[in-house]
Image (cartoon, rainbow, N blue to C red; front, side, top):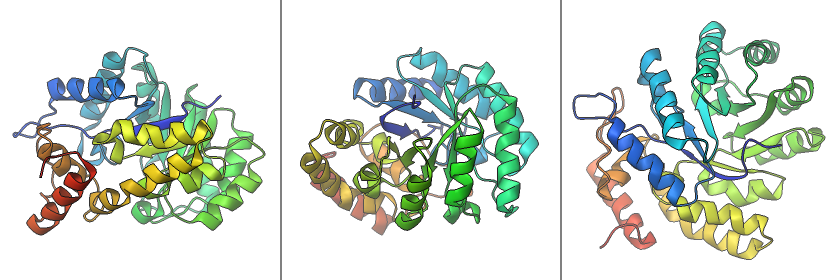
Length: 296
């Protein structure tokens, strides 16, 4: 049974001007996501700026999101690290604090071998009972989890159930699904590739776009699963210009700018991320206007 099917939001973390987590705003955006049909919330991933949080903040945000959601939809906690012991510590604590699943990114910077990746993920999985999604994003981590490695882990480790694929390599993804024997729950990690990935047997998307267009992102998936592939593809293509601008600077710089343009007041970024360049923000605003998210 998949942790979720459809559109999961890779949730931003709102901050106050002094840099503290804005829990009042966090509760507000979680409630908005649920009201708009989001199928799962992913807390403290890349988009949530977990890499600039202390471990205490990281776990407190996960716990707060779980308490706010109250079991209405699954909460998946980002608990990856380039240190296996740290990933285990975060995963165990996230499980204790109420998460329904874990998203564990491949160790970054170390550039582990495929053997090392297998050992790392198995060690994390052995420490918890929660279902785990691997997170393959070689553009950020410097290492690619090979299709054979993903398939092997999902077959051999009971609670490693799937992968968020953000490599963009459809040949590798197709190879993975041909090897999967139905054991790999596949999620798109790229908002411009949802429908193509669903066509290979994907379960949904873990989405940045959902932060500002949750209903539309949900509908891309729901339409596909309902058999209306034409509508799903239409919705996907309509979102492409906006998605392009959401990634014209490194995530989550543009999506937080977009939410602030919508009046959501999610606050600043944490360094080393900096505010969006004015010319890029102007293009983002124009794309949002065209998509109907803000008035011209």
